[in-house]
Each structure stands twice: as structure tokens, then as C-alpha cells.
Image (cartoon, rainbow, N blue to C red; front, side, top):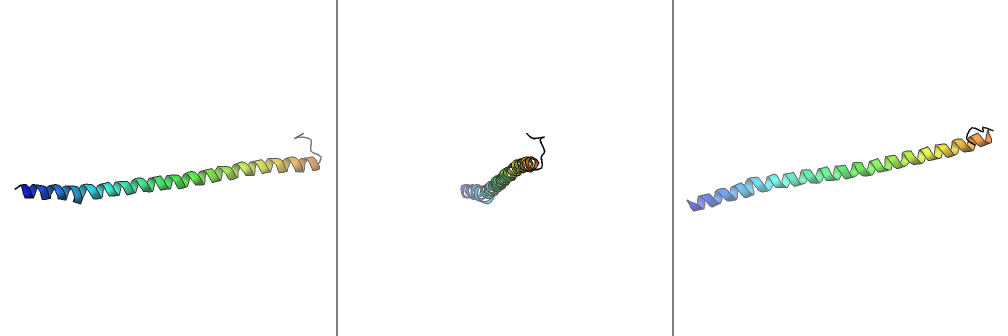
Length: 73
């Protein structure tokens, strides 16, 4: 009787709990990796937007200066 109980415990542990835990760990790892990738992409996107805005301001100021526009002066 005790041998059957041990095999049931082993089946529950290694047949159910360990695979469920492994799948949960893989899901958490996947969520972490996807979040990290989107974080890096968001940083790059905001960096490009900031630099393009800066360049637009500098170029519009330079072109306005050569065109005689005193609006930015």
C-alpha cells in the first residue's frame, strides 16, 4: 500500500507539477524577452524622433536665416 502511495506522489510531482512549473517558467521568460525587445525598440524610436526633431529645428533655423526670415532670431 505504501509503495502505491509513493508512486502516486512521484507521478504527481514529476508528471504534473514539474512540467507545469517548467511551462510557467518558459512563459515568464518569453514575456521578459518580449518586454525587453519592445523596451529597446521604444528607446530607439524615441531617440530617432528626438534627433529628427532637433535636426528639423536646426535646419529650419538655418534655412530661415539664409532666406531673410527673422522669425527665429
